[in-house]
Image (cartoon, rainbow, N blue to C red; front, side, top):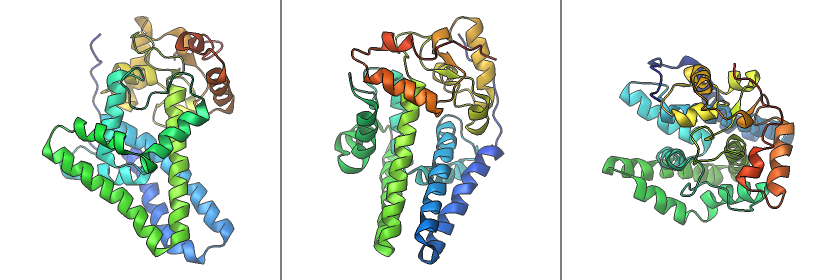
Length: 299
Protein backbone atom coordinates (compact mmCIF):
# COMPACT_ATOMS: atom_id res chain seq x y z
CA UNK A 1 0.00 0.00 0.00
CA UNK A 2 1.08 3.53 -0.68
CA UNK A 3 1.24 5.83 2.37
CA UNK A 4 -1.58 8.35 2.75
CA UNK A 5 -0.92 11.89 1.60
CA UNK A 6 -0.32 13.87 4.76
CA UNK A 7 1.12 17.22 5.75
CA UNK A 8 2.59 18.17 9.10
CA UNK A 9 2.79 21.74 10.45
CA UNK A 10 6.01 23.70 10.11
CA UNK A 11 5.97 24.16 13.89
CA UNK A 12 4.24 21.58 16.07
CA UNK A 13 3.08 23.78 18.93
CA UNK A 14 1.67 21.04 21.25
CA UNK A 15 4.93 19.11 21.04
CA UNK A 16 7.01 22.23 21.64
CA UNK A 17 4.85 23.05 24.66
CA UNK A 18 5.63 19.65 26.18
CA UNK A 19 9.34 20.15 25.48
CA UNK A 20 9.14 23.58 27.12
CA UNK A 21 8.11 21.86 30.36
CA UNK A 22 11.57 20.33 30.56
CA UNK A 23 13.19 23.72 30.04
CA UNK A 24 11.18 24.97 32.99
CA UNK A 25 11.85 21.94 35.18
CA UNK A 26 15.61 21.54 34.68
CA UNK A 27 16.70 25.11 35.62
CA UNK A 28 14.27 24.98 38.56
CA UNK A 29 15.93 21.77 39.80
CA UNK A 30 19.43 23.25 39.56
CA UNK A 31 18.52 26.55 41.22
CA UNK A 32 16.32 25.17 44.00
CA UNK A 33 18.11 21.94 44.95
CA UNK A 34 20.18 23.32 47.82
CA UNK A 35 17.13 25.08 49.28
CA UNK A 36 14.75 22.11 49.16
CA UNK A 37 13.96 19.57 51.85
CA UNK A 38 14.46 15.88 51.10
CA UNK A 39 10.75 15.62 50.35
CA UNK A 40 10.99 18.59 48.01
CA UNK A 41 13.96 17.08 46.21
CA UNK A 42 12.13 13.79 45.81
CA UNK A 43 9.11 15.64 44.46
CA UNK A 44 11.23 17.48 41.92
CA UNK A 45 12.78 14.23 40.71
CA UNK A 46 9.38 12.56 40.38
CA UNK A 47 8.16 15.54 38.39
CA UNK A 48 11.32 15.31 36.28
CA UNK A 49 10.64 11.66 35.52
CA UNK A 50 7.12 12.55 34.33
CA UNK A 51 8.46 15.38 32.17
CA UNK A 52 11.17 13.10 30.73
CA UNK A 53 8.65 10.39 29.90
CA UNK A 54 6.32 12.89 28.23
CA UNK A 55 9.22 14.41 26.30
CA UNK A 56 10.08 10.97 24.98
CA UNK A 57 6.78 10.95 23.05
CA UNK A 58 7.91 14.22 21.47
CA UNK A 59 11.44 12.96 20.79
CA UNK A 60 10.07 9.83 19.14
CA UNK A 61 7.81 11.78 16.79
CA UNK A 62 10.52 14.36 16.09
CA UNK A 63 12.89 11.68 14.80
CA UNK A 64 10.32 10.72 12.15
CA UNK A 65 8.65 14.05 11.39
CA UNK A 66 10.47 17.09 12.83
CA UNK A 67 8.38 19.20 15.18
CA UNK A 68 10.26 22.24 13.83
CA UNK A 69 10.94 22.25 10.09
CA UNK A 70 13.53 25.06 9.60
CA UNK A 71 16.99 23.49 9.65
CA UNK A 72 18.77 25.36 12.47
CA UNK A 73 15.88 25.31 14.95
CA UNK A 74 15.37 21.63 14.09
CA UNK A 75 19.04 20.92 14.81
CA UNK A 76 18.88 22.69 18.17
CA UNK A 77 15.61 21.00 19.20
CA UNK A 78 17.10 17.61 18.30
CA UNK A 79 19.95 18.19 20.76
CA UNK A 80 17.73 19.52 23.54
CA UNK A 81 15.17 16.73 23.19
CA UNK A 82 17.96 14.18 23.46
CA UNK A 83 19.25 15.93 26.58
CA UNK A 84 15.74 16.04 28.07
CA UNK A 85 15.39 12.26 27.64
CA UNK A 86 18.96 11.36 28.60
CA UNK A 87 19.84 10.04 25.13
CA UNK A 88 22.60 11.28 22.83
CA UNK A 89 20.25 12.29 20.03
CA UNK A 90 22.15 10.99 16.99
CA UNK A 91 22.98 7.73 18.75
CA UNK A 92 19.38 7.14 19.76
CA UNK A 93 18.18 8.14 16.28
CA UNK A 94 20.32 5.38 14.75
CA UNK A 95 19.24 2.92 17.45
CA UNK A 96 15.58 3.69 16.78
CA UNK A 97 15.79 3.43 13.01
CA UNK A 98 17.51 0.07 13.42
CA UNK A 99 14.38 -0.88 15.36
CA UNK A 100 12.22 0.18 12.44
CA UNK A 101 14.38 -1.72 9.98
CA UNK A 102 13.94 -5.02 11.85
CA UNK A 103 10.61 -4.34 13.62
CA UNK A 104 11.67 -5.92 16.91
CA UNK A 105 12.87 -9.04 15.10
CA UNK A 106 16.33 -10.56 14.55
CA UNK A 107 18.85 -7.80 13.98
CA UNK A 108 17.07 -5.30 16.23
CA UNK A 109 19.60 -4.01 18.78
CA UNK A 110 16.85 -3.65 21.38
CA UNK A 111 15.18 -7.01 20.87
CA UNK A 112 14.20 -9.09 23.88
CA UNK A 113 16.27 -12.27 24.17
CA UNK A 114 14.49 -15.66 23.97
CA UNK A 115 13.07 -16.54 27.37
CA UNK A 116 14.24 -13.25 28.90
CA UNK A 117 12.10 -11.95 31.75
CA UNK A 118 10.71 -8.43 31.68
CA UNK A 119 12.82 -7.19 34.66
CA UNK A 120 16.00 -8.63 33.11
CA UNK A 121 15.25 -7.05 29.74
CA UNK A 122 14.57 -3.63 31.24
CA UNK A 123 17.68 -3.78 33.45
CA UNK A 124 19.88 -5.04 30.59
CA UNK A 125 18.96 -2.29 28.16
CA UNK A 126 19.02 0.47 30.77
CA UNK A 127 22.34 -0.49 32.35
CA UNK A 128 24.04 -1.40 29.08
CA UNK A 129 23.88 2.17 27.84
CA UNK A 130 25.69 3.45 30.95
CA UNK A 131 28.06 0.69 32.09
CA UNK A 132 28.97 -1.54 29.15
CA UNK A 133 28.00 0.41 26.02
CA UNK A 134 30.88 -0.69 23.80
CA UNK A 135 28.91 -2.97 21.47
CA UNK A 136 26.08 -0.47 21.22
CA UNK A 137 28.44 2.43 20.54
CA UNK A 138 30.20 0.37 17.86
CA UNK A 139 26.87 -0.43 16.23
CA UNK A 140 25.70 3.19 16.07
CA UNK A 141 29.13 4.36 14.90
CA UNK A 142 29.05 1.89 12.00
CA UNK A 143 25.50 3.04 11.19
CA UNK A 144 26.55 6.66 10.65
CA UNK A 145 26.57 7.57 6.97
CA UNK A 146 28.41 10.88 6.88
CA UNK A 147 31.12 12.79 8.67
CA UNK A 148 28.49 15.23 9.91
CA UNK A 149 26.59 12.39 11.58
CA UNK A 150 29.77 11.17 13.28
CA UNK A 151 30.47 14.67 14.58
CA UNK A 152 26.89 14.89 15.86
CA UNK A 153 27.22 11.50 17.53
CA UNK A 154 30.35 12.56 19.40
CA UNK A 155 28.89 15.95 20.31
CA UNK A 156 25.66 14.41 21.59
CA UNK A 157 27.52 11.98 23.84
CA UNK A 158 29.57 14.90 25.19
CA UNK A 159 26.41 16.96 25.75
CA UNK A 160 24.50 14.29 27.68
CA UNK A 161 27.40 12.79 29.62
CA UNK A 162 29.00 16.20 30.18
CA UNK A 163 25.79 17.56 31.69
CA UNK A 164 25.61 14.62 34.06
CA UNK A 165 29.27 14.92 35.05
CA UNK A 166 28.86 18.65 35.58
CA UNK A 167 25.97 18.05 37.98
CA UNK A 168 27.91 15.32 39.81
CA UNK A 169 30.95 17.54 40.36
CA UNK A 170 28.98 20.64 41.27
CA UNK A 171 26.36 19.07 43.57
CA UNK A 172 27.00 15.30 43.92
CA UNK A 173 23.66 14.43 45.51
CA UNK A 174 21.77 16.32 42.83
CA UNK A 175 23.84 14.64 40.13
CA UNK A 176 23.16 11.18 41.56
CA UNK A 177 19.47 11.96 41.91
CA UNK A 178 19.31 13.24 38.34
CA UNK A 179 21.14 10.16 37.05
CA UNK A 180 18.80 7.85 38.94
CA UNK A 181 15.80 9.71 37.56
CA UNK A 182 17.11 9.34 34.01
CA UNK A 183 17.64 5.60 34.44
CA UNK A 184 14.11 5.16 35.79
CA UNK A 185 12.93 7.11 32.76
CA UNK A 186 14.83 4.76 30.46
CA UNK A 187 13.27 1.74 32.15
CA UNK A 188 9.87 3.30 31.41
CA UNK A 189 10.82 3.95 27.78
CA UNK A 190 12.10 0.42 27.17
CA UNK A 191 8.91 -0.87 28.75
CA UNK A 192 6.97 0.89 26.00
CA UNK A 193 8.91 -1.10 23.42
CA UNK A 194 7.91 -4.37 25.09
CA UNK A 195 4.28 -3.34 25.39
CA UNK A 196 4.06 -1.97 21.85
CA UNK A 197 5.40 -5.22 20.38
CA UNK A 198 3.79 -7.74 22.69
CA UNK A 199 2.80 -10.59 20.39
CA UNK A 200 3.92 -8.79 17.22
CA UNK A 201 5.51 -10.63 14.31
CA UNK A 202 8.06 -8.81 12.11
CA UNK A 203 7.47 -11.31 9.30
CA UNK A 204 3.80 -10.27 8.95
CA UNK A 205 2.75 -6.89 7.61
CA UNK A 206 -0.42 -6.94 9.70
CA UNK A 207 1.46 -7.65 12.95
CA UNK A 208 4.29 -5.12 13.22
CA UNK A 209 3.00 -3.58 16.43
CA UNK A 210 0.16 -3.35 18.90
CA UNK A 211 -2.68 -0.88 18.33
CA UNK A 212 -3.91 0.72 21.56
CA UNK A 213 -7.07 2.77 21.12
CA UNK A 214 -6.94 4.27 24.62
CA UNK A 215 -8.22 7.81 24.11
CA UNK A 216 -6.53 9.23 27.19
CA UNK A 217 -3.14 7.70 26.34
CA UNK A 218 -3.26 8.76 22.70
CA UNK A 219 -4.41 12.27 23.62
CA UNK A 220 -1.51 12.91 25.98
CA UNK A 221 1.15 10.88 24.16
CA UNK A 222 0.53 12.09 20.62
CA UNK A 223 -1.19 8.95 19.29
CA UNK A 224 1.66 6.67 20.37
CA UNK A 225 -0.84 3.84 20.80
CA UNK A 226 -1.30 3.46 17.04
CA UNK A 227 1.94 1.53 16.77
CA UNK A 228 0.98 -0.81 13.92
CA UNK A 229 0.28 2.15 11.63
CA UNK A 230 3.46 3.85 12.83
CA UNK A 231 5.62 0.85 11.91
CA UNK A 232 3.80 0.33 8.63
CA UNK A 233 4.14 4.00 7.65
CA UNK A 234 6.82 5.57 9.90
CA UNK A 235 6.74 8.84 7.97
CA UNK A 236 3.07 9.56 8.75
CA UNK A 237 2.74 12.47 11.24
CA UNK A 238 1.29 11.63 14.64
CA UNK A 239 -1.81 13.72 13.88
CA UNK A 240 -2.72 11.35 11.03
CA UNK A 241 -2.08 8.00 12.73
CA UNK A 242 -5.73 7.30 13.69
CA UNK A 243 -6.83 7.79 10.06
CA UNK A 244 -3.90 5.70 8.84
CA UNK A 245 -4.91 2.95 11.27
CA UNK A 246 -8.46 2.95 9.92
CA UNK A 247 -7.11 2.72 6.38
CA UNK A 248 -4.90 -0.23 7.28
CA UNK A 249 -7.72 -1.95 9.16
CA UNK A 250 -10.01 -1.61 6.13
CA UNK A 251 -7.46 -3.57 4.08
CA UNK A 252 -6.86 -6.23 6.79
CA UNK A 253 -3.44 -4.90 7.76
CA UNK A 254 -4.25 -4.48 11.46
CA UNK A 255 -4.36 -7.87 13.15
CA UNK A 256 -7.45 -8.08 15.41
CA UNK A 257 -5.59 -9.91 18.20
CA UNK A 258 -3.08 -7.05 18.35
CA UNK A 259 -5.70 -4.42 19.17
CA UNK A 260 -6.58 -3.34 22.68
CA UNK A 261 -8.43 -0.56 24.42
CA UNK A 262 -5.83 -0.57 27.21
CA UNK A 263 -2.86 1.80 27.27
CA UNK A 264 0.66 0.34 27.45
CA UNK A 265 1.01 1.94 30.89
CA UNK A 266 -2.28 0.53 32.19
CA UNK A 267 -1.46 -1.62 35.27
CA UNK A 268 -3.63 -4.47 33.95
CA UNK A 269 -1.71 -4.41 30.68
CA UNK A 270 1.60 -4.36 32.55
CA UNK A 271 0.65 -7.44 34.59
CA UNK A 272 -0.56 -9.26 31.47
CA UNK A 273 2.68 -8.68 29.59
CA UNK A 274 4.87 -9.65 32.56
CA UNK A 275 2.91 -12.84 33.21
CA UNK A 276 3.00 -13.87 29.58
CA UNK A 277 6.74 -13.30 29.17
CA UNK A 278 7.35 -15.13 32.45
CA UNK A 279 5.48 -18.22 31.20
CA UNK A 280 7.52 -21.03 29.65
CA UNK A 281 7.45 -21.64 26.80
CA UNK A 282 6.30 -18.20 25.65
CA UNK A 283 6.94 -17.62 21.97
CA UNK A 284 5.45 -14.82 19.90
CA UNK A 285 2.64 -17.00 18.55
CA UNK A 286 1.54 -17.87 22.08
CA UNK A 287 1.78 -14.28 23.24
CA UNK A 288 -0.27 -13.02 20.31
CA UNK A 289 -3.29 -15.05 21.40
CA UNK A 290 -3.45 -13.31 24.79
CA UNK A 291 -2.30 -9.82 23.88
CA UNK A 292 -5.55 -8.00 24.35
CA UNK A 293 -8.17 -10.45 25.49
CA UNK A 294 -11.19 -9.13 23.62
CA UNK A 295 -10.17 -7.15 20.52
CA UNK A 296 -11.46 -3.61 20.34
CA UNK A 297 -12.66 -1.82 17.25
CA UNK A 298 -10.33 0.66 15.60
CA UNK A 299 -12.17 3.97 15.67
